Length: 196
Image (spheres, one colour):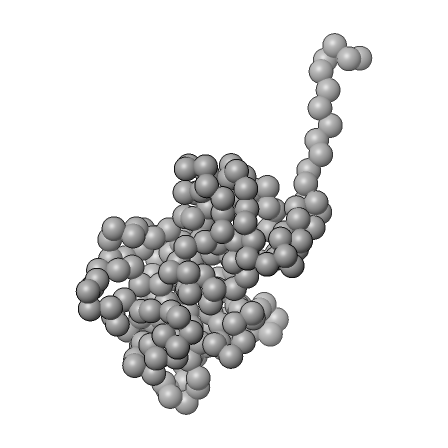
């Protein structure tokens, strides 16, 4: 499902990025297209905005409080990007996290299971392994190359079907995905009519 307002929200987050945000992420090995004067047409991979997380749903909303009164979360689009263009083909959802807790994140609409669906699709098309990363921050550090499981309720066979293999960044991540795959593997009883 495509939410057109998500693209507007992400554009607003991109416009809020300032030198403080760029410096904090650059110190962690993440660049921002605005900081790269040689390539002014790179696809923006992140923005910044104050957020509030709903304790009941676990989803975030953008804070209505004035900028500067709350710390900003890093906001990453989830969708299909066109690396030869300056914007996204479509954005389905957003993921937000704080730099001091990169292993904890929240979705905005709750419709995405993975970040990096275009990487998964390319891996299937070209017979390459999926590079599975642990956090959205690691995805940013990799320049938007790879995939991150955002919601472990996913069905790995559905999300990663058609790829030759998955190379996880850590053993724990590989084991977690293998356990989830075993939990969701559907064994269909298949018979033929002549068996009766």
